[in-house]
Each structure stands twice: as structure tokens, then as C-alpha cells.
Length: 153
Figure 1: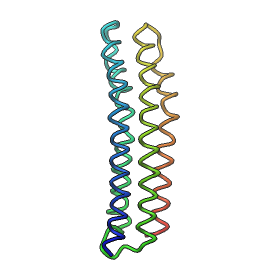
Figure 2: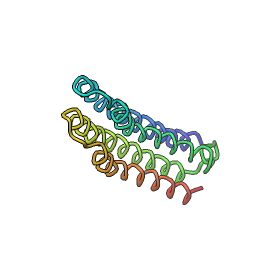
Figure 3: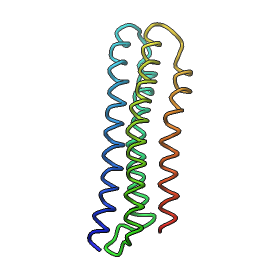
Figure 4: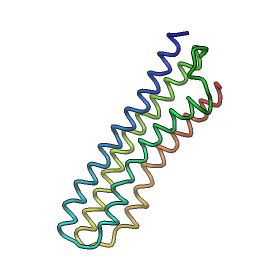
């Protein structure tokens, strides 16, 4: 049914857009901090690069969610049922919003670590550890989308 397919693709669009927007904001937050810190300390660009890239993973999780529903569960077809469509929309909302918020917050954690490194502190390892916590919830949201998809496929 066309309506069901529209509902499902709305969920996919939300999944991709929100997680991508969050990643763009997150990496920008860290990137801005890295530019300032690089002026103060030499030889730390590799650390700054790793910390800047971390919030970008949530955008990849949004794409992975789309890939799961398109290729693994193979439900994005004209034969999609109403429950599959609404489940896809719900998965998109969950993964999209969690990706959006966790990547922005992870960017803030990483930016604070970059500032600390720029002030001469050895904070790279600690920042990586603390940056895992927002990432965890994005992974949980991706796992939830996977479980929802397997339940309806």
C-alpha cells in the first residue's frame, strides 16, 4: 500500500536526517574547539582529529538503520504492512532523536577535552572514555531499531 510505504519512508527520512544533523553539529562543535586549541599547542592534531570524528558516528548509525530496513529486513516494498510501516516510523524517530542529541552532547564532551589538551593537560584518554557514554545510547538506539526490525520482518 502506498500509504504504508510513505509512513515507513518518513521514518527512514527522520532516521537519516536527525542523526546526520546531530553529527554535523557535533563534529563542528569539536572542530571549532580544535582550531582554537591547535593555536596553543603543537603536535596534538592527531588527538584533535580523533575527538572531532567521534560525534560523526551517529550519522553512520542512521545510515546503518536505513540499510537494515532496506536490505536486511527487506520490508521497504509496496507490500509493506501497516504494522511494519509504523514500526519503521517508530524506529526512525527513536534512532533519529537519540542520534541527534547524543552526537551533540558527545561533541560537547569532546570539545571540553580538546580545550583541556590545548591548556597542556594530558586528557586525551580520559576524554575518549567519557565520550563513550553518549555513544552508548546511540548504539542502544541502533540495537533497538534492529530488534524492532527483526520483530516485523
